[in-house]
Length: 197
Image (cartoon, rainbow, N blue to C red):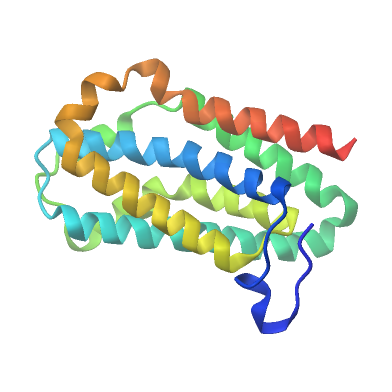
């Protein structure tokens, strides 16, 4: 586990190998979910790609930060049960991604322009998964700074890729690939449970 030292706690420490894997797996898994959403928007002919990518990146960076802070607070209440709850939260998000329907993406595809409140609502809607993962990160004791940075970069990259290359990526992304993110999170959650024994 990462130990914290004053103001440098969020960025200066080098995470150990286990912590890096706990970051990379959910970041890539949720990145796939973001990519599918962005490809769907691209195929609908949505306009303002750069603005959408930036707003989505901001939402997907702030939501795990909020979840992480809530997780740290909950950790003080849950004590030794905190890591168990965090692992179950990761499994829960994985199951959600595995069985989620495409209604939210289809709803967004009907809008030729995402602006104002509609854009903000869409960004919050697609970043709910990050809130739950951030909660589990807080229960695992991972640092806030790196979590916000990595989730934000992931969202910016995958949203931009999906919006820019949607027509080229769509044939490559089948239904099985769409569920890959959920499978990765479930396996990560099970691994976190295994570590607790």
